[in-house]
Length: 459
Ligand code: UD1
Ligand code: CA
Image 1 (cartoon, protein in one colour):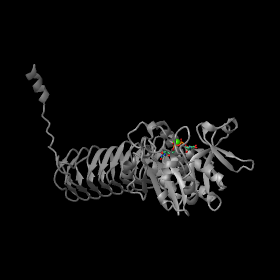
Image 2 (image 1 turned 90 degrees about the vertical axis):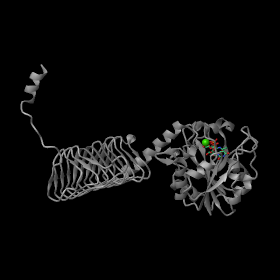
Image 3 (image 1 turned 180 degrees about the horizontal axis):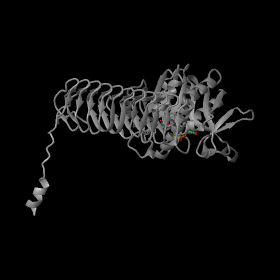
């Protein structure tokens, strides 16, 4: 069986956070979730996560995942180090297994790279280490090769001689090892080094000494093994991820203006000829169909946007906007709102938990809450659906072709029937019959010469 062990017991002190390092998020997903996804993409049959003091937090936050958790006891009375951590999983390792060892703080690793590592390893080596070249390898373990270019050993930075220091190929800390070789070598790791830690990397020297063939697989993109220890590194990794995701969507035919300012979470789906301007943020389970243009300060979360839609500077959550509708600038759609085809939602319009059907318009300064609005309804400037009496919320209904004049209050629950009209300024508390005109306001009175008289009185 192929199994992955994800090391996540480190204390992460440099994050300066009460939250476990591997649970911090990049583009909306937990750091360790990226590693889990890549392990799954690589086709492993089982995933083991090693937690330390953060174990309960990990269990809670990853409760939906099919993971075996192993606890690493942390304290002065226990050994420490990656080698010790892996040795705690021994009871779950069979000789015939292939064990992929990953770290929870290298979230940029791609599933396809792990697949390539596994392919290189299979049937050739007892252990294969994932490497990459880097301009400044300070701090990393170097990959030392023999004259034929075969793997010879890993030398930690502090133990390098002058020649070794110049080696640009480094140990990523990620590797795959056969169960048999792993069990054999783990037993021989010691903590006799200046850090007093049990280093997993020691298995290579041990295995080399047993004439076990050791392979390497070199990544083309060194960023894949970028490790996160601090909040600055977290933000840098997020930047790399943003570039990767935005680059992917541009390849797929999305147009982006200033892509470095555009945020697209990995869960989002886009289609050809979508146009995104600076500052657009697309989150969660959002999909945008072709030829839709989203510009300005837009945040769209868990929403489905149709084709040929135009959205300007608006916030949209848990809603749907159908084909050829237009929204904004400065609109807010939320809570299961459905905006029908060719509907126009203009500036300063909020729509909550409502359905507005095809061809209807709410152009300016409108609140639609808890309503079912039919087709070709005109909702004029300043209309308010008064859906809340301070205790309960009520739903209103407006049928096809109705015309609601400016500054109308619809006091819910109320039913405005087909092709009826409501005079502007009305406060509607009763249903409006089909085809009729409702006027619910005091008739205008003009008091002749009112001020002329007052002027004399007031003198
Ligand atoms: C390691 C490698 C080094 C490599 C580098 C790449 C060794 C000796 N060195 O160093 O060659 O270039 O990674 O980044 O391995 N962890 C546990 N339990 C422990 C200790 C660590 O779960 O007892 C976890 C940490 O949470 C972390 C991972 O293991 O996710 C790596 O440990 P870390 O101490 O950061 O190794 P490096 O010093 O970076
Ligand atoms: Ca590290």
